[in-house]
Length: 278
Length: 278
View 1: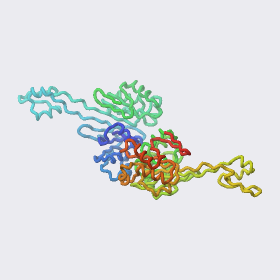
View 2 (view 1 turned 60 degrees about the vertical axis):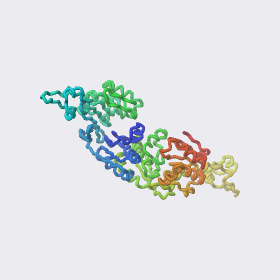
View 3 (view 1 turned 90 degrees about the horizontal axis):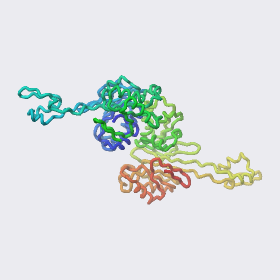
């Protein structure tokens, strides 16, 4: 889960995702609309009988704020809560397992703030069974070949990797940037992401206000998606002044056509091609 | 406002009540479903430009928990937040103005907990203009007469109060009791209330569980309403195990027919007769 505003547990319930699948929560910054839902969510996880450790990644102040509340409201719960503090400097690996790394993206807001880049690791290529049989490749060689190796026959002939395998799906990348002023310098960190979520609090009618309040306009978010060669952009975190956000969508699409408006409980599968479920 | 669970500010917005009309919040006890919405509500009040002091009535621990969060998340807000601590002993006047008093009701839950009794003060009786004219009552006597006095004519004749006035509406009383085990001894505090909200977490199928978890069944709530001679009972705070709470309503109605099921954003005007808007 990325950010956890008030009512996040109700939205999680509506999304029909299982609460037990939630193990890692990433908090971009310490404004209420990004973290006030944590205490209620954790209380509910306790009521549901959770035992697995919950990991929370945030600036260090969050633990200092949360601990007294957890000690008071969640005493005797059956699972540990581990806080993993990061700094707002960004570009720091804060999570890694065998399939994914999570890296902070430096953002500029009124308070210290980071975005998150979720980068899948490359998975092994697929063995072509007929070629393996043809060259009589021994089983113990297969893992090495899947991971990029060539095969050398007993006769010394080199069979190149790409003759024995078909490539695995390219690893996917998702970047989340909220809340922030427009930072064109982040383009290198966002290069080739499959999906970029970027805050779009304002339209071009409020470009000055966006700068003053450390927010981004639709066209700025789109410019970032375009120069980063993102496959898709999703914009959200709209100012309440826009009753209909279609104007923001249209402004973004002028610069980066493959843009979507974020909606409550929207679900996007990152594949090629991207599939979207509303 | 009485109690403020997570999402209370969203419900307040849906109710179309003005945020600026909210000045006093009464918190019955320090479980998350009764107070986790405070910090978000206060943040929103700050965004709306509030300047009037907000008064919060609660057990003393709430201020100790809230102050660090208020200092961090709500620094620089333009209104004061005053905490008014009360003890769980109950039967203590915690608020009074010229039209109403609020008294705590002792409850028994797993943590210290109080209900609240809102008692309207008697308003002055209505002057009968024709009688005032007939007896040529001087203007400076009117306030005294409205508030219960008789009139003595210059000839020494006593004109009784009830000949000069019609009675004002009887003062109304509303009692709120959640969360609590069944406490029949509270009947004297609840005597003749116009409306009693009482928690009904369980039905008679779970009477043992109700006792173990310090909650009340529908029939117990109804028994209290009946012996207190309440005009109307509204039951709420249902266990999630009841998909349809009609069974709880029916159980309560067997004992106290004038019972209602609480619903989100239900609005009840306490008049004679009571009017209910859904």
